[in-house]
Structure formats: C-alpha cells, structure tokens
Amino acid sequence: MKIHYCKSYDEMSQLGAELVHAEVEVKPDLLFCAASGNSPAGLYELMADKHFDSNGFFDWMKVIKLDEWVGLTNASTFTSEYDIQEKLLKKLGIESDRYISFEVEAEDPESECERIQVEIDEYDGIDICILGLGINGHIALNEPAEYLQPNCHLANLHPVTLASGMIEKVGVSLTQGMTMGIGNIMDSKMVILFITGKGKKPALDLFLEGRIRTDLPASFLWLHPNAHVIIDRKSLS
Image 1 (cartoon, helix red, strand yellow):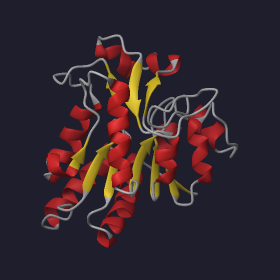
Image 2 (cartoon, helix red, strand yellow; image 1 turned 180 degrees about the horizontal axis):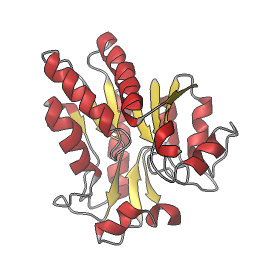
Image 3 (tube, one colour; image 1 turned 90 degrees about the vertical axis):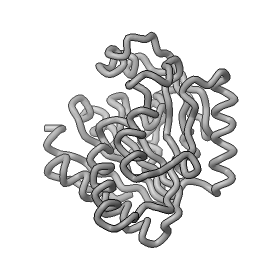
C-alpha cells in the first residue's frame, strides 16, 4: 500500500487523476469502477478536462458502478446512478454499451447483484477501483460486521451510515444497498481510496493502525498489492 498525504482536496484529486491517466495510457479499454459522492468528484472533473483536451482520451474505457441504494426511483437525484451520470459518464461521452450498472429500480436486488457479478467475471475483473472512506470505515457498502462478503451482494446499511446527513436528506427510508464485495475490490488491479471530509479522522486513525478487522472494512486494503490511499489533510484537520 502507498499512502499519500496531500495539502488539499485539489492536490488529492490531481494525484488521483495522474494515477488514472497513466493506467489508461497503457490500457485504453480498461474497466473503471466508479464511486459516487464528493470524495472522487474532483478526480472526475480532471478526467473530463483530460478527455476534452486530449481528443477523446477515454473513448475506449468501460465503467462499472460501485454500488447503489435500494428503495429509490430512477427520478431521484440521490441515486448513485444520477451522481455518476452527471459527474462522469455524460462528460466522457460514455454510453450504455460501455457502462455496467446496478439497476436503481431492480425488482429483485439479490438477482441484480448476481447479474453484476457475472459481468465482472466476464471482464476478468476490475482494472481501477475508486473508493471513498465511510465515517464508520466502510468501503462501497461493505459495512462493519461480524463477517464480510466477497462478491456483489445486497447489504444491510449500518446505523452510522443511516444517520449520515446525506441519507437524512433523501426523504425515503433506506435500509439496504447493492454493492461490490470485498473480494471484487481486492481483485481489482489498482485501488484508489480517497479520504476527505469532516468526520473521517477517527476511521482514518483506526485504519492507520494497520490491523485487519471486519469492523473496519477499509483495513482489508492493507492486503492489496497495488492500493493507493490519498489523504486530504486540510479537510481532516
């Protein structure tokens, strides 16, 4: 694992972009796993700039969505789908033929997770997996628990996640989400974990202890051979 300390959100995003761009240079048709939320938003802006300035730099890249809430509608602006579409896919011109996504209104979320797992297996895994750190140490929707699941699965949301400000704004009672499993993340050829935002320092401090524990899912990244943890010092101070 490589841990990078950055002075600001912008510096964190720039370093993430440099890592991503270098990988795409080598493998233009790689499979990129996109997380929603604020943590990777700066990266996505820089990717959009690169695409515009370099005449279609990401024209061959494929994208897969990291996770999705269960219980929202396609019209909701709180879905991971909406976030990723607006911040990344539309700006890079990525259409449905290069995009794999958990369906927001899936009638059977467990079967939907199985479908996404088949897609990952057919692509021989994820090349770059983008993550943010939850305030309780979760990555994707792999929540602190007695045990963690390796593959795509239907996850029960942790009380700390449910109490977050974003969830409260949704106006719908959410209890579950569809998500990549710890195994999917660990099988990715490169992982980039952004750590930024208020309330993240306690989880970061536990993470930096370097102990692998299921009540801190992010700690499993210590076992990954090519993980980059990029920390925005300013937002954590």
